[in-house]
Length: 253
Image 1: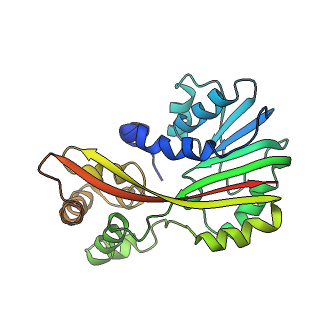
Image 2 (image 1 turned 90 degrees about the vertical axis):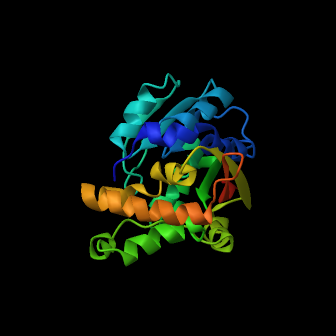
């Protein structure tokens, strides 16, 4: 799947805020080693480097475009290109942090305990994932994919994997000394035309657009924009309100 760092950072403040909210609940004073899994262009990694300037901070991402952008960001961290599904560090971390990444990886019942195994005793495993897979932004995306002439081509497009909060408790609790799980709904106030489309173009829409040729992509975009603009109408003041739920978990090992 291709990633465009500039599209992703169009709403940099809104995308970084959940990372800051998650980090505020991580109670570690002076960790020696910190990992940012799915670091993207380095916006979340910057928060970790600022919080713990004495730590060795590493950012890991599977996208060459994102890693290239992160390396150019000026963040004081080492950035590594790797697939988290098979990635294994050479030493444990005191903090393993992830902002909006695990939803792209299947089988959280196996994945998360494996990643928790890379946290040192007394360390923290913290992540947040989007929890809006049943919101119009995503249900309409799937509807357009299934109802158009491209349906067969998009039938096996990479999905989003998010479990219920209770499921994450069951998965994480056996490996954690303490566990905090919560959800938050942000009301993003977006500016400009086709604002929600621009938002999802940097994330969830990428697998669908990547699978289509130019003509199909244009037709898909027209239909999807039309449906989005009904579900998320632009107000008289030019703003679009975009409710966005996220799920957070902080486990102390």
